[in-house]
Length: 177
Image 1: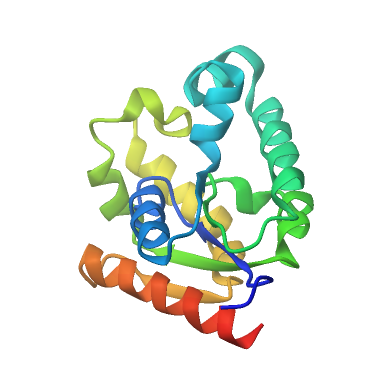
Image 2 (image 1 turned 90 degrees about the horizontal axis):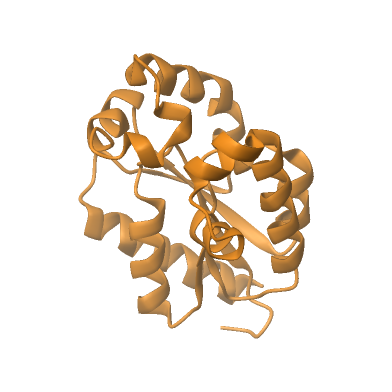
C-alpha cells in the first residue's frame, strides 16, 4: 500500500460499533487508530458527557473540528468519528480529501438496545425516551451517513465480518491511490 494511502473514517449512530470495529481493523492493517471521542476526552480531561453538560454541544463540535484539522495530514490511519461529526460539513471537508468514509449502518432500535447500560456516557441519549431520541438522530443524519464512500450493514453480519469488510476496503483504496 502506498505511503499516501487514504485514511478510513468510520461513521454511524452512537453504539453501532465504530470504536470496536475500527480498533480491530487498524490492528489487522497495522495502522494507528484514533477514536475522536476518546482523544477529546484525554485532551480535555473530561468525559464527553461532562463536556456537553459544562460547555455545551457547540463547544464539543469545535473540539471535533480542531481535531479534524490536525488529522488532515495523516495517512493510513483508521479513525472512529463521533456520531455527530458527520453533521459538521466544515469538519468533514477537512478530512474528505485525505480519507474515505465508511458508514456502519444499523437501525435505531438495534443501537439503542446496545446502549442501555451506557446512557450516562452518551449525552444525546440521556433522555426519558432514548429510542425516540435515537430515531430522531438517525433521521436527521441518515442522508449524511449515506453519502459515505462505502456502507456496511453492521446489524446483518457478524462483528468479525464487519471488521474484515473494513480491512478489505482499506486495502483496496490503498492500492488504488
